[in-house]
Amino acid sequence: MGRVIETDVAIIGAGSAGLPARREAEKAGARTLLIEGGPYGTTCARVGCMPSKLLIAAAEAAHHIRKAPQFGVHGGEVRVDAPAVFARVRAERDRFAGFVVDATERLDDDKRLRGWARFVEPTVLQIDEDGPLVRAKAVVVATGSSPWMPPALHTAGDRLLDNESVFELDHVPASVAVVGAGVIGLELGQALARLGAAVTMYAFDERLGPISDPAVLASAQAAFSGELTLSQNTVVEATRPVDGGVEVHWRTRDGSRSGVAVFERVLAATGRRPNVAGFDFARFGVDVDRLGVPAFDAMTMQVGDLPIFIAGDATNDRPLLHEASDGGRIAGTNAGRLALDQPVRAFQRRTPLSVVFTDPQIGLVGQTFAELTESGQAFAAGEASFNDQGRARVMGRNHGHVRIYADQARGRLLGAELFGPDVEHMSHLLAWAVASDMTVTDALRMPFYHPVVEEGLRTALRDLGVSLRLADRGEIRCVDCPPGS
Picture 1 (cartoon, rainbow, N blue to C red):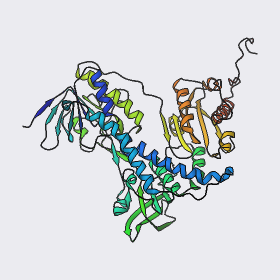
Picture 2: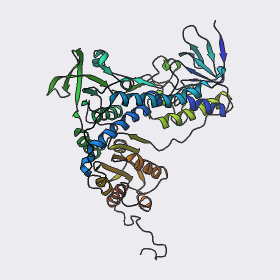
Picture 3: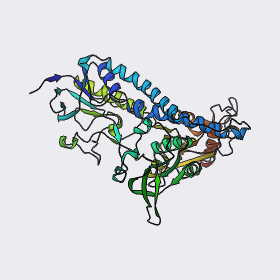
Picture 4: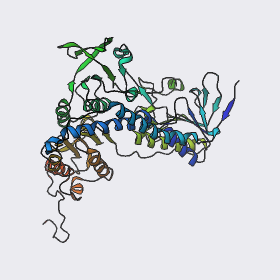
């Protein structure tokens, strides 16, 4: 028998969920051991949020120069120095990731362990084939996710890119087939198009990113179709390397059309899968989904009644950094408490908030159109277009649509879907409003400056007030008027 390591809480994964889990478990008074088999540094810093935003920033700079003539400003032909673009992406990416790596490596040697973990028992882990055995009182699984691609793309050879390898390019491909129109596909596809690639995006269905509201989706389809070739309801059936590129065989889902096209590169943007395949949670008597993710309580992060907690992308739920961090904190707190024979606590999760950094941006707040529709809840919607919105036209960025939802009974704000200029900021305002349990009237009593794009929110809120037939839309509150006047 090999070496045995005893600890209170073992955390598998040193990323956006695992690191806060460790901190919170120690705050609870537990001893911890952080176990990582892959590279240190979070998915966000190494291959996700930060490098993608760096590439998007370069693409937006090129786009703004090309659009400058609409203001009467002429700067000549845009020249994209691709090696410099990608060198900056990698340098800044490594800088961001380096902060996380340094912080992790500063941990005492007895608090971190390199190697791949598998469960022997719910609180016993085998590290690698011949490594130590870790005995804990509770375990946190925070193993993240990895890119997934369908079999049809496996044959693309060395011309295949994913959301990790794309940042290692040293030139902008002349043409790119982006397979998938989710968040990754939209962000990277538009960025490559603005840097000079001819981009065709193959989407399996009508959806673009997380948008579910038909009015918002129609606005997004119109905007993206103006920058790249958008082929929706399309299946990529096969790929094969040819001289100078990749041959892509496609067909529409209804079988009405099919074709073959050649691209220099194929970018697989077909999603990420949770890294839980080797854990076999089902043998511990808990239900698992088709990806092997165990059923867990989102307010405690506990897997069934086991001394196991799960957080971050490994849950295949809310795959966002702030959600991973929150889930990690909850999991670490409860793992630490359980290890010290204290009861597990339930924690309130934040109002859902997500942003897609395309241009225009996409924002989702609270309950989405699809969630509200499927729930059967009675709700009303108010909307506004950015096509003629004052500040949006001033900036030459007048594209997009916003829809805000409220319950029919009280006019309480429930959520929103947005597509428009800088909606990352408007999404935060609405998320705070939803989290504060504000009504439409409450929101309309808030100050709106002029001219700003946030006035589009006021337009949508006013429209929502009409839909709800509100007599008092909250614009001005009289403090000394007789009741009912």
